[in-house]
Amino acid sequence: MSASGRLSGVDAARGLAVLGMFAVHVGPGARPSGANYLILAADGRAPAVFTLLAGFSLALAQRQRPGAGGAGVGAPGRLRPLLIRCAVLAALGLSLAALWPGILVILTFFALYFLAAEPFTRLSTKTLSVVAAAGVAVGPVLSYVLGPLFGVGASGRGTVPDLTDLARGWTGLGDVLRGLLLTGAYPVVTYLPYVLAGMALGRLCDVRETAVARRLALGGAAVAAVAYGSAWLATEVLGGRRRLLAAIAAHHPEALAAGDPVRAVLAQQYGAIPSTSWDWLLLASPYSQTPLETLGNAGVGAALIGGFVLLARGRLAARLLRPLTALGAMALSAYVVHALVLAGPANGAASWGALAAFCAVALAAAWGWQRAWAHSPLRRGPLEHALRLATAPRARAGT
Image (cartoon, rainbow, N blue to C red; front, side, top):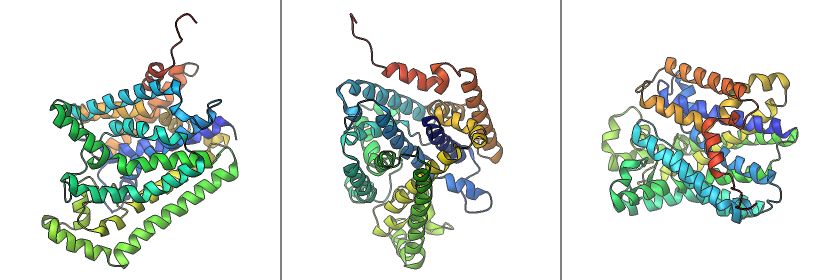
């Protein structure tokens, strides 16, 4: 398989994750009924898959870099571009979150993911794989244990930092760091494992080989089924839900009047689990940030990568995937534009019609942009190109 086909498959998977984010932000709501199951399927998984793909792409970039070896982005000449990239992402994320708090902007968290992942790029593949696996299990436990120490034992998680927080001086900066590391909607303690898992998969699975891509797709689907199935078994069969209802009665009595008290508690914190019962860690609900949800979402991401890489091998399928591939290639631009539109003309949109319009316009615009700039560095998107220019190594004076 050519590198082009492999990267097209990865871009297509990323494009689907972008559409999943649209579904969560402008769709009719994630409810377990009828067509709304599609929104429920995207809820929580879209940002997780997006994050896993970031790690997978880091591994691909490291593999393609001549002479990179095990140095990764930590090589001396690469620290400055990394810092610039993270600063730009953080500025975009903080600005968009301040512009309209109606969506959980992930870009600021991404800036910290890339910084935190830098030392791990130097690890051997075996060590990285062990660390990634440990992170999936340990990260949620750390979140659970540390929550009460920071005053968020029963509530207060799921925040997204913005520029107004920084205006409060050192106190605001402390809140921003706490949110990014532990109490935010996508905190490093529970989301960095997705990046590390993606990096490990990118090193272990050379999807240029058809057999490897097929194993990745099937293996990912199997892992997801086991993780989600285990969560259902633990909560619905082995008494986990009954114990959670007891914890809710003690710590969240207002949620007992809801049709699904467990879901009601999670909705109050954008899914981050409270530190009131160890049984919360047995869930795999959207945004619950538990070991089983992380494992299940990672399995879904692996299945999508392998599946789309296989599809991209076929000429007809590759052509049909081009709009999705184009959207994935310029995911940053698409994400920022959609956030700006939601803060303005589409503020409050939440319907199937709005979702269809967002998806159709995004796919058409991305495909049209790539055709218009087919032979230009701008092909991968305006913000992507600007970020590439900002982080490009500068020639030394006199050379």
